[in-house]
Image (cartoon, rainbow, N blue to C red):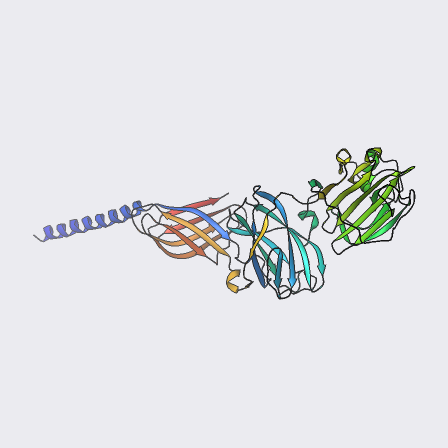
Length: 446
């Protein structure tokens, strides 16, 4: 009788033990854990060490989406109402505006990225004008978002014209507009004469800064390193070999009046952001053949030609164009010449109508919370039971690190798990998560 009881107890114990093992195995089999994505998010404040930033929207053009489009922005160190291209702040830390940076919000990645910029001009302590190259601007009515960072007393300028403006000029046929000269004194009057004229700003001709131009009576301007010349034998071959602007290169005189020219000469008007050179000339040997034309050099690298009126225009045989002097980079517009005609040559993208400046946001001050780097793990529970994640591993060829986790995921749900203490290695790595029941999910990053 005693033996039977013992046997019964033993049998019962075995039965219970077998049932418990089967229950655990069954629950483990019901888990289906999957790591969908792993991402390391950069700090919400892109330029650490810069104390302020402001958001600015750029509204797209009705002509379509644009890529690599340069936008002009003027930053004023003072109080005022920000609108259009002008932004006011009292938190510039450097009088030369070296503490300016630009970012663009990439809507695809959901993150900011640094964009190149060029500082066109600065008025110490007062204001500065910049060009920022925006990677993508959608078509109207959508807009792109950029940020301006500032408020750092030690950083050097990151201005880079080569990364911001285009390498070559684009010709734009614009509406004719003549600007009357203010100057009354000719800088070069005669036949085959000229003079060097200082430019009051650094003129980025083909992104190469020029400080002076030689203006010749024969209707052209020369830039260093091309030597001064008074050549009247206007040929395209010579244009291509010289750093040159030729609004109307012909055999001309600037000391003989005739036709519509009553005060022959070359006149220079200098302004803060442009320099205008006006020729009032007659054709050599034929003073009844007269013409007025202009070159305008802009601080941002633009070049404008204006041809006004003329008498006996068909008697002239000019060459018109601009050149870098390397036989490759030049634009010839000789065949387009006409009276009351204007051209614009620009180192920027051009679209009509252009993208426009939208609203400026409120100035933001840096907070420590912006500095946190966040690593997120998107984990899906595709099984039928609740999952308890107890650990996470990050491994590569040199790192094998374990992190404690205490996270539950209900059946059929996805968890966005975020940590600020996990920094993902560069290149290839593997992420693993381990459940309390011993299941493992693996995410390989190639």
